[in-house]
Amino acid sequence: MAENKNIRFDYYEKGLSLYCIVRKEINQYILDVTDGIFKSSPINPYFTMTENAIIKGLYEINEARTLWEDGNYHVTVFQILGASPNPATDDKIGEGDIFITNDYIRYRLWNMPI
Image 1: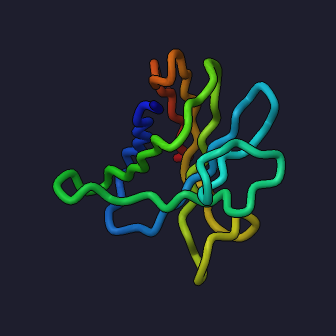
Image 2: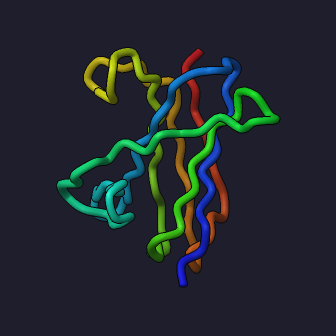
């Protein structure tokens, strides 16, 4: 059974529409929202991030459908500017790396533009 991977992004603005893309670094595969599997050509790579109801400005996704292999994963967070996600025109507001061992997130490192 897969463990829950809670990916959190703390940002100074609240009430935003954010999404993220998760990439497995070893092979550059992208996590597909439709089935939770890393693929070279995902059908839908855009995970909608939900703002925490109590801690405003904390945006999260939870993913527990599949086991993730040990290793580094890169997460890029965008703010939706139009009607739907479009990384070519949306603002990238942060990115970070997570390290997985035994299907658990061991650490997170975030970089945010100033």
